[in-house]
View 1 (cartoon, helix red, strand yellow):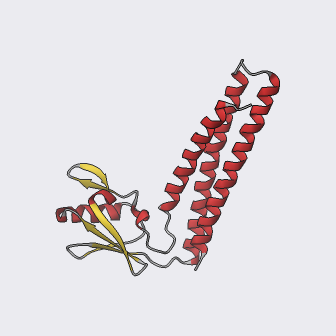
View 2: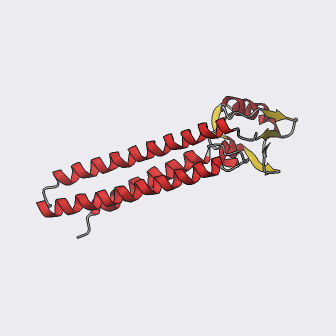
View 3: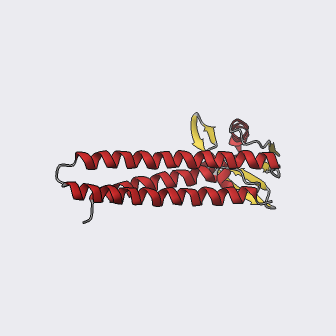
Length: 182
């Protein structure tokens, strides 16, 4: 028997995975990557605007991010936003573009980054477990299901939860290996 709640929890768990991946994209790995700047918000004419909407971001030589604003008058605000974003990188403003030189990660920094990745992975697992808990209580309250169907549905929910937990582990392990790779 197909249980409609399974599709619902899969959708919600997919969103938890998407969020985890977007968060992991901003974690520094020692290589320059434009997604590191996804959370940088620039005060653009009085409203906070994502950096990637007001400037082109490119990678030079594998370690340097070059930010070229579409509107040259926003250069100072972009520089302020990069400083405020706590990237651990000092922006260099040459009057037309901003350069961010991504430093090599030290052993200690790599360990800190892997801890951050583990923490993000654990938060995603908590989200998945909360979704499972909500689904289990919904199944228990569902009076249209007899006892056997309830048990089957609960087993199916647990199977889905286990598969998503495993997926989270794979994603965080891959990111940790990427960070630890010298």
